[in-house]
Length: 388
Ligand code: 13P
Ligand code: SF4
Image (cartoon, rainbow, N blue to C red; front, side, top):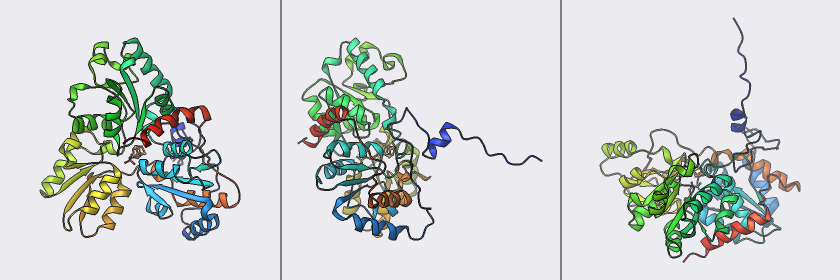
């Protein structure tokens, strides 16, 4: 009988472990630290002590999709919009430790002063949606729009969930960043200036916002596929479209289906279905309420005691909300587990390691956007922060 042979590590396996390098990803992939084991019973105390030692020099931001073990140490929690505002509002903090994903930390670096250091406790905390639009693909798309004679009438707009390079592209072309909590306002701003929008990289947020909130038909939207010549679109389709959606999506919110909604309604006809606008259009159409992470939090806080809710967003948040509101029946819309695996990469060992490094005077995992790119991206971010 032959013994068990360890499979030789593939590039993918190494990336899952957060090692190696990946030129196709907006994130870094290496965590150089000597991390404490997750089983170490002193981790909570170590995080508390390190945070106390750093005092006002440290500001910890935590996205709502972070694990409970991490979010408890955040000075401010929020969705990506609130965290961008907060990062910009603390010029006195020397270190911003970002418990979220890479594109959020990049935005924080762009919005903070040159002296402030933004730290991402695990560089492998990327975002698969952000990786679905690379700078060279977007340059090619713009060249296609120019060749089709429509570029002059197009305003590019990118969801926060994109790399700094994409935000810089948008900034250079007089465009704007949006988040799920201000997508409608950003689109209104865009259509006051141009006849068409190129919406990057989340097709669902773009489609759901223009169809549900702005009265567009589905036919007003076309989908640009970066893997096909001319995006898979004819010149006529590009000319007739009111919005050109990039073919990207969130792998977490993309899991919710119409089946999940129907099954929940069969089980409990009184249930309220509440979903994030990154979900597919048919799911959003079948839902009772749709909104950003902050909207979801408010809707559940304001809900009647005893009411039932099935929520279509990331599981760390849904579980936390269910625990915070035991007087309401809050369940998860999907039948299976649906964490954001990259958000979950920031765990207590990584946080402890990053904080203890800072205490020792070493600044680990600094997220630093190249100044030229940062200046262009900042224009697009500032336009978002100034939206009415
Ligand atoms: P918001 O924080 O804007 O709701 O976005 C959700 C998300 O997917 C973050 O990665
Ligand atoms: Fe990216 Fe989706 Fe995870 Fe947000 S939830 S970080 S969009 S993969």
